[in-house]
Image: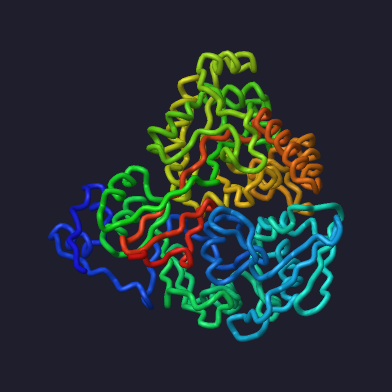
Length: 539
């Protein structure tokens, strides 16, 4: 039924396409698009770097490619493990896991899924051209893949690895026949983008978006949407404008300054859930000498890297008012934290609390460390990847400047930021990490783990933090078969990581989506935006 759209705010009108702006200002009614059989238009906040499912371990990449490709083990909206391409799995010994594939699963070209495809995927993941090996940690524990028959395989590990099914939920399976010799550009063009998922690849356009078509032969049942238009809308104003104007049907990462307004709009529906995404800061640990963007209080060179001194890291940590960040900068769409998991999750350590701001103590620590006049630093951040990323960096810069650490912010597009990070070009940086496994070791291995390409650890650890004691404890913890004992060891690792300040946790994001009123989005703790999670509202 037609309905009138209320006038948009001035901030939103600046970002609206001219045609949509004219419609809104004139008060012209927009028709609600019939749900069944129509194209679903998604406005996603985070651009995706490639259609290759193994190129980058980011939630945005995983969500987009997840329309085409699927993992052996799936996760529901609450991050609980569910059968995916594997209908079952079991540990047949401490070092052998057996996976049984679903019968009748077909690739988009009609060929059957077989165990050899899984073996091929596991072999490809650490060796993708142009990748920093972001998914390597999930498969590195696997020493040998034993193909028992077309539907059964056994994965042999060097030591007990109870988290293997959880880890494999992060690895999307590709076909051997389409993937042999394929490079990322072959997935971007669609040549190798042949999956088993609910949607077939139509196109991918860097910086713009992707399109998918319904897979009528999908093993999980006929998908609801005939087509999916997956658009990248990194600008907050443009994204809100698009859902208000009816230009898209669903948006993710609802901007905090628009959240209340969108909730009040009778033509829209907002879905929310506490998320697993940590926003954190990390210093450069890669060099003994002066890091990039760091100098003395008058701009003079420094003889040493100040961030290698724990007193300096503690001073910077004490300078930050996390409550102010969550309440004012993020407008109550974030929760202050001192670790990377929300309360109530497995291996969350209740004894690790957010640091309370104490600027006076911070200045004393700087003086003790030999920096009574402070120093200068550039804080680098993406400006289009995480909600409030650049605004958060600006607020942190003010906190640090007040204790004598004069801070400038370098805000970069995500593509530029992501390219420079692995080269250790940042003196201090803002990052984000979603613990999609729902337990502490995922960040311990990836963000705090010492960089080791052979081991598959630390590829997102751009700053090259290294703590051998923490690495050893993490390695022991993830080999413990008993869940309670493993949780106790992981909690101890969380305590060590928090005390050594390999990262400075700021806050955990709340996840929010806005849809047309006649649609419902099943909010996901892992913040993935999926066409399969959008359904017509019950009437």
